[in-house]
Image (cartoon, rainbow, N blue to C red):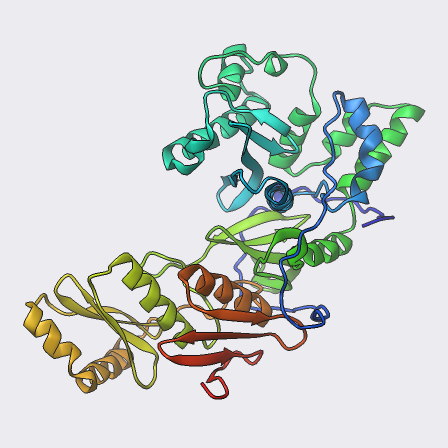
Length: 459
């Protein structure tokens, strides 16, 4: 991350129009595997840039922000927040931290890490600084969805107050920082702070506003150069080291991530594309390019369980195992059984009816029946298989086998994390020959780099 050079940055405004994304990829060469080929979640040290008191001090410090793995990343606030959160929780394992974003459509405009410390709740972001106190909010509120949404609204309100045309009233700004009605003098009027300028840059995609604020003259030219060096690095370099950081469990934990080419069609119908770092986080699939910002694509959800699908190529059996475990955990009085043969499907009970779930067919439910009727249906697996085959022939609703930019490595990570969270015994091997192994229903299975699920040797 040292010695970076820079190129002009295109504004986001001309690039926000959502392209037609194709399920295509151009993955990089796999990273070398550890000696034992196993992913280790090792601790690591992050050098956190401190927020100086003045814009002048901040500009002077910009030449050194890439000395540590917490970059000031152009149009990448969510990635910065993920880095910051991982570092903070490694140092404060007894505390809580979550990430809240603000969006315009699918475009992510900001990401703020909300964290607890010594019984209080703070926010950390480039624009807000690393230690913004939320008065009236306590650590227990981070487990309360309504309180979390209140914090999100306060963040958005503060950002809105700094945008052109906003009503920068003292009361509005004070409320944004303190919902109990207290006062924060630093938010009231005065010249633009670095935080305000960063909000403008994030919202518009025009990071040159930061350099322009340095003014003119020989002394200011060096400050402008510092801004350019920090925020306007060449796209290819930014994507390269961002992917390597996000793929390293020692830096961010285990995250499904890939460096890929995103394909789309221009308004005239001609194909086009761009390189991006793609990754999963908190139920969304994100596409990051420094000149296009970060876009959020929701992961498709299972209509029965409400949980995100694994979205793994050739992963019908994976989805069925995951369905059975998660469905029965949420409905302990019900039953779920795997049907033999293909396409992979599961028969399950739901409040007196029998349903069939599978990737190649929409969820089917029978009419309600009494307990004896349900028992008779479950006792006839051949009848259920015939029903499955008839549904598969008549009602095909396949889910996408890939999210934009997915690779085999990313999909294995996605499936591994979901299986682990569900309590299914699984093991992930990373490197040139990645594979996912898991044990379920008395059998062991291997999901290899060809993305074909096979019984494990001796399983």
